[in-house]
Length: 327
Image (cartoon, rainbow, N blue to C red; front, side, top):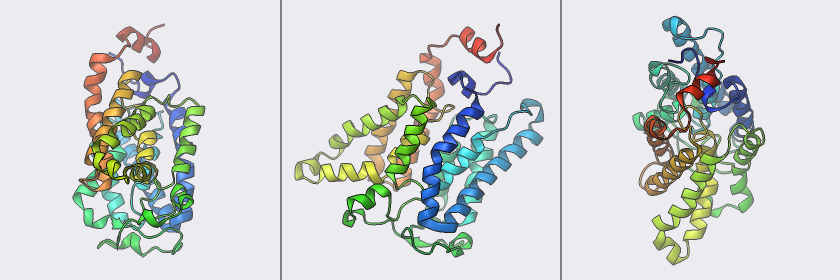
């Protein structure tokens, strides 16, 4: 049995802190633009979510499971989870929602399953889906970007701000590409997301199997699921808007690129992302948009242990050798 090593070590020869630092770097364009568009409240939500995720993970693992954790290991995955969770929130979200979501993601989804590398679901995605299902009326604050930079009252408003997502059909192409419309804090700009994706690919942090599988799934399944719209002529435009504005690109890179909750085998990673995309396309118009994005991710996350068990090409000896148990 291998003890004391975390799951990212058997997915890549790069160590976990190196991977997480690069993922955080890839998220910087989305973080910066979210602050530019939504001001101080976006910065506070992101920083608060990061700090809470990190603090809860640190406290739970160091003090409640002291004998089962490597005390020299700094869990940077908590910062990544906090960032992704915050970027998927509406800009006028209360800090109380952040507190509840991070507690669920850190303690229930991550720490109760054994801590870093042992969770079977992406903590950030699970936390976002949890708060959406528990209090959907508190997650309707989609204010327009670049308005009220100093606005802070929404952070302590437990009643929940009400402002619908922006109507993108009347926007210019440049506004859509730049994400200059009312949407979630950090997923509107496909340019910023693709910058992060390019960085991860350049640094070889991700290989692109999941990203390619997810996009191919959307490209192939979307026309089939919306055949009538394509026959009527509106399908191609709807498809393009879905790719650019739904947040699916963000999910493809920063949710399906997770090392712990996606299959080890590259082919299975590709297939799982393809299935995730198919589920997203099928349910997206029938449920709340964030549920349409998050629920399929958790579905493939839950299936990953079984997929790895039956399809992984790595032998137990290879795993031990990579972990350092064998010379």
